[in-house]
Amino acid sequence: MIRKYYIQIGLAVAVIGILAYSFSGSPDFHDLTQKSFEDYKNGIINGADRLVLEENRDGFDFFTPEKKWVIEAEFIPENSGREFEMLMTDSTTEVAQLKGVASFKFENSNVKVLIFEEEASYLLPFKDLTNGKTTYGGGRYINLPKEALKGDKLEIDFNRARNYYCAYTEQYICPVPPPENSLKIAVEAGEKIFKKK
Image (cartoon, rainbow, N blue to C red):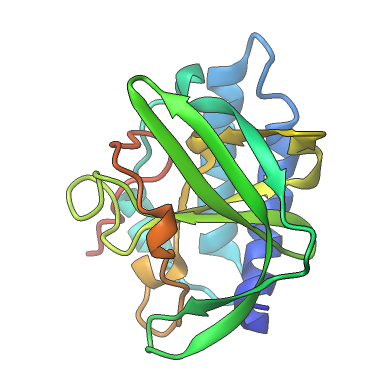
């Protein structure tokens, strides 16, 4: 599995995401997604690690939530217990448990991504065409709640895309999204580049 400290951070963020995620189909989708942004931001600022000081509050930025980024993907499980060597930003590798493969069509593009098993959620690390422009150059990730997977369907809400903690401070070692998860589309959803003072 990915390093313990990363898992613990991911789980804390996942709790926030899961609570808001369950309301994503409601008439208040926009407001609830915006609230999840605020909860996420406050969680980082007020968290035990103090990754982002209060004076950097204005450095957070998010795309306007859009329902078109809530995707119902086809899901093929990986039942062989296959382990995946996840490259980290310090050039080491960590073992991640492959959960399966999700595929979907967005506009005119066919997309396929690897989904990984975490303790309280599924992990989707990815890169896309916005990286280094409007989003963090190292890619982003989504913690998908377990209930997002129903049979052979997996709901992926790209509005919940978040920066790796490396985007806030270089003291963290983060996963590098695998080449299989380099999307040929611009995911203009979720968190944008963090602006440091």
